[in-house]
Length: 448
Image (tube, rainbow, N blue to C red; front, side):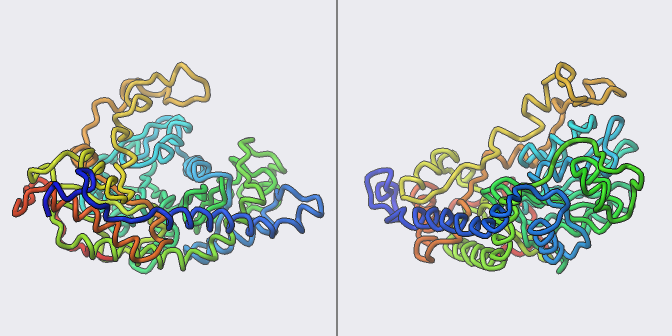
């Protein structure tokens, strides 16, 4: 393969058509429309809000309990709401800290500042892109109230080690499962390892309600405390441990109830989860098979005890620049010219500890108590935080979108072959992967 044969230089495209993507989008639209038909009997009776967790809300929550193995589930209007509720229930507030990766969507961390606490950003493991247990333990101190791990791209974090650290150091564990519906670690459901598991059900997730979320827990008192934030009717007549027996229907007034329409979408979507995860795992297998002989591309590995769920995207590390090839942007552009939907990592340039909001912005200038009045404000900013693995990797991370799980094998393989073709044409043959770009993969398996 030579550079002249690449589509970016006038050669033939590897991927012939985008039609499978168009079909996928059409099918998703039709599926959601059909799902909403189930709500018609409810609206015919004039019911457009379910306040007490009954009906479709309760049926969806029961489904989430079965999926995760937890005893309780609480549906809400967003994954962010579930994280906020979990932190409030666990006592996150002024004078406390929560450890969270910087390589994640900002909603993993913004509920911490909503509670008037301080986010402390930890690094990730290069192999899996999930929270590094050693860095977590190094950052635990007397102010640490909780650790929030993120199962990024559906890849479970090293939960046995992190759970042991949290237990030994006396801090709570929150799982951000927004990408990982149906994932498992050591045969146990993602969302059941922490005190609370938090799931997004936003429209781009494999279990989706348009806009919705859900929290799972085994602790009935934590369930009640989450209700106190945003579920006033459940405080009145839906508590699990009767933690607040004399409150009536009074809560803290943050209304986090989901709309019934979102629950109908989510419940039927949950019923399709096993098939979706199976097809996503198959697509990931095909992608890795096509890239097996391409040393400049490293598909992100899973831990041996982990079973991915949700996926959300197929993430990879491009190592070609260090091997004499072009930079990541040029490489991605050349792959796109082949017709493959390769993308730069969405968190590129947006590692949380480097963003203005967390490193510079003075939150004391806004209302809502989004800072800790008990300690110097400079200590609450992340501008001096250094996360060497996250900062080194972020410019090399690329991804293929999740929609590939729903399209034919030939199309998926051709998208991966386009990556291999561009690597062969632009990265010098025989080049070795530099030691710096070789994560320690001992104990990992690169197929899921």
